[in-house]
Length: 191
Image 1 (cartoon, rainbow, N blue to C red):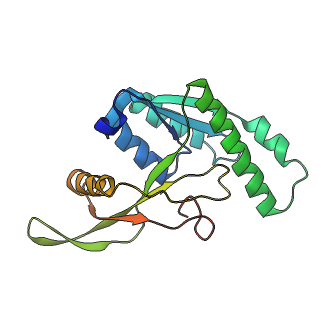
Image 2 (image 1 turned 90 degrees about the vertical axis):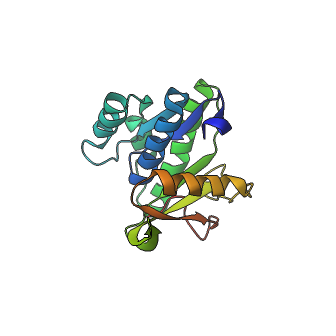
């Protein structure tokens, strides 16, 4: 990762869920302050969730964290909207707008890679013994509006390097998979 990033900056949306938090922790370890994490509080978070993200990533991990309180902005967009799918689209589109604004402030463009560790185990082998550890699913997408997303073709050497590093350096991971599902059919995030 250090080699690929070089002296550039990396921008990461950090809502605070498992997926983005794992990616942030790995990137902080790899590139430190070159990572810029953006946490957008849209006013619909669980109680104390934004404060926890700030505490963990800014205070404990010394991350380069940008906290954006966009509560009023999001809630104003949702006034008189009752249909759940319409709300989801409004929230998604507004999140992208806020994130793009923050990206412009630091002179970066948006693309996304992330990892998912599902709640099931797989069989692997470590040190000559069976190991029942977790798989890690890598997802890379290109999107403009988050309503649709394409999976880019990667140089095969990149996922192979990611797999080698993750299985060697992350305890409890025995398998790395690459998610090829576009949106629609799949969603951007894993739920």
